[in-house]
Length: 463
Image 1: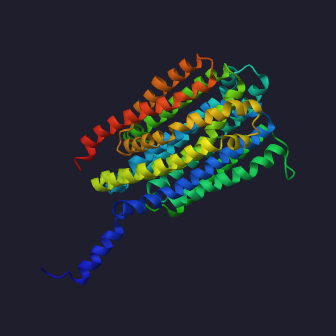
Image 2 (image 1 turned 90 degrees about the vertical axis):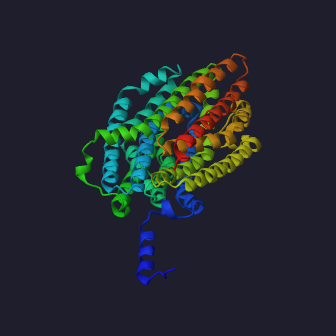
């Protein structure tokens, strides 16, 4: 057997160094390196979302209810931006795996164009929809005024969140999740600092009330967008940012939305569901709506790290699918599912053992505690099941099969959760409504298992 020469050894080392780490680094280490920064940054985002509501709750329960009612429209906006980002992330990572530099650059720049177009839509919505929207949910004039003020500001000045999420996705697509984390932390920290200052008029600022919460949010988002843009231009050398690439390309946009559109529709279904659930709960009391809103803030502290973890496997799976590395794909899926399940078990224990403490953060009245304590304990039962569903949905997105995630969400929320919640509400006992979440998640996992079986057979097994 011939000996390898020095030049051969150097050539082999240089080849390995030129390989993207998503194709050569041990999967466990890679998943931690990519996901951990996103998990931390999403934890911080969840924290400032909770802090935002904690300060709003100090204004009044009606202010907290208004923010809860605003959630479906805000979620629709976030879902549009994040869904587009998922499409950009998946396509960009796949092109990196295929080593097609021109396609990488054009995908990134077209993603920026789509972010700008999305903002124009949000601006129009913010100028026209808020009052009509709130009047369709409640007749309480104070809640309506709080809600219109808060939502209008968040929508009209939403260019910050649109830019921040898009530029952060570009960093994540090339494995620079630490830089993405820096951007998200910047926005979160600024938001947390400004919340009490602008809501209550500290340090010489005027007392803006609920408008202050909205302004703190959008200023934090604009700051994150500026930081993430700078970090992309300065450090993201795998993408070449050129004005020429800003010319819309129909083929690229279609490819982005093949994966991203199902995610957008998935989020839209969630907004529709929350809107109707608020109507169901509103038949009991506005306090019930506030409890549901508080639940969403609290569960984000559990779900956001899981989403960060699963965002981490999207570029890993997509890259290794493009590079045809079957073993690395399956290893990433197994590690991610186990980690997500562990996080959700921790969340389940917190909701079961500490519901009064959690609700107490939001100035909970006796009525809110009466409704909220059993609500948190019952809803939390679906957390471990959701861990597995979220993992499968991320895999579908990474492999360009976003339609599966859309179908799963439609079955879970429209076919199962909403009808189950409505039927259980007819019992006259609000506690029964919360069981609909577990029923829906079990249906979701069943669909995901069938979907993954098909994806494995048609795509992964053939690598």
